[in-house]
Length: 118
Figure 1 (cartoon, rainbow, N blue to C red):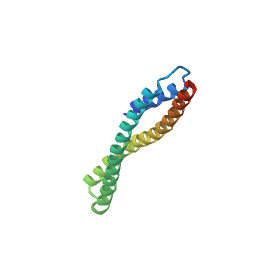
Figure 2: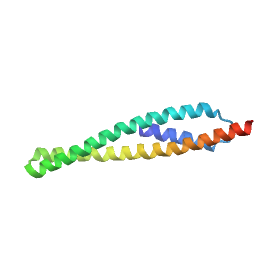
Figure 3: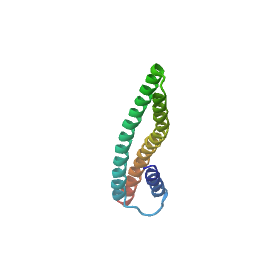
Figure 4: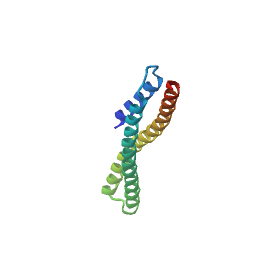
């Protein structure tokens, strides 16, 4: 998903910097659909990240009370998995927010194109 969101952001930036004639209605529909997909993906990853955070904290607390090797290993596994989840969620969150800004710029360009065409 990281590659996909980065590709969509690059496409939006390329489209906005292009001087060619663009069918903005078609492009706005395309990017609105992708923003919806990324919003859904972001929600799923938020839930997973929160779950892993809670499991990490819970396993750490259990390890503090029991001090067994199994709970220590469980804590380390959850903690190791939590780090990439946080990184991926951070990317999704920031790039989706950035796509909102790019989408707003596309709306402005579409308005200017329609205004200039009349």
